Amino acid sequence: MRFIRDLNPESQKMLERIYRASKHHQVRERAKCILLSFQGTT
Image (tube, rainbow, N blue to C red):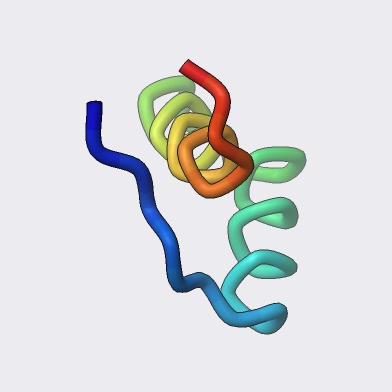
C-alpha cells in the first residue's frame, strides 16, 4: 500500500478544517483518508 509521505503543516491544518467543516460528505471523507494515509493508517 502506498501512503502520502510529504504533507506540510499548513496542508494538514487545511485538511483538518475541511474534515470538520465541509458540508459535503464525500469531501470530508476524502480529507480524512488523506490525513490517515499521512499517519500511516490503513
